[in-house]
Image 1 (cartoon, rainbow, N blue to C red):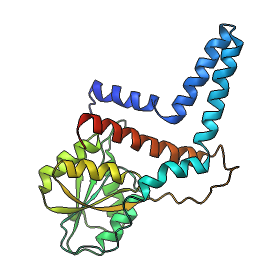
Image 2 (cartoon, rainbow, N blue to C red; image 1 turned 135 degrees about the vertical axis):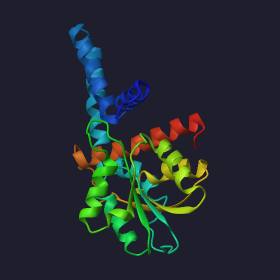
Image 3 (cartoon, rainbow, N blue to C red; image 1 turned 45 degrees about the vertical axis):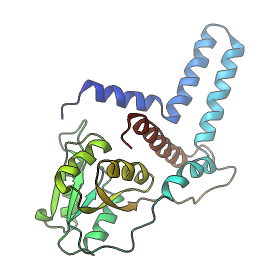
Length: 237
């Protein structure tokens, strides 16, 4: 897919503002002062870098960041039967797809819309997810693909053209659901939230530090709060 330069710039800025990137930036500042023979400032920024990385990979901090997002919408149990579409948002074929499959088998004649563009691969995430669903036994004619949208905002615009104001089920990660619901509702859509991929707070002890899982959870939550802030400033939510 051809990607506009402005989109790539936004992506790079987002990466630069992620928690681990911030820790690395502090480390690079420390190295800068070390090469300038300013030992005191080098120690200061090195200490900040180490403490920051410990914090963002600490289970209680990650849980604190995720909890408000993941508790916003419960798992969909009261499943409506007169729904025409399930939108499976994004390219997570191993976790979110299971929720779409669960709902598919409980709603007569429903179709699943897969989404997700391709940045590096010749196959889009929508195509890969569609293949996974067909391998799980869903007929090809019951799967639609939405592979041109690059952002959640663009996903909402595509769905508006497809369904108008008709209700549909929206499947995405629990931490991503608050931002997605705000965007879709602002666009005049009527999504029914079906969150998936909950990150259970299995660890919370004071020694649960420097864990890649906790760092990943912190980055997921941070990305959502950053997205909410940006979309709020832009008037999209």
